[in-house]
Image (cartoon, rainbow, N blue to C red; front, top):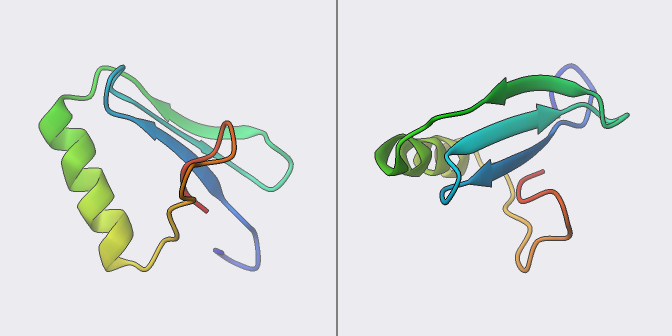
Length: 64
C-alpha cells in the first residue's frame, strides 16, 4: 500500500525484469535488463519493507 493504493509487482530473475502495477493493473514502472545481483537486491529491499511475497504466486504477481 502506498498513499492508500495497492501496488503489485512482478520480479523475474530469469529475464531480469521488474514490473510494478497499480490497483487497476496499469503499468507504473518496468525495468528490464537487471542482473541477477540487482534482482536479489530488490528482493532484499522488498523484504526489509515488509512487502508480502505471494507464495506459489498467482500469476502474474509475485509481490503485493
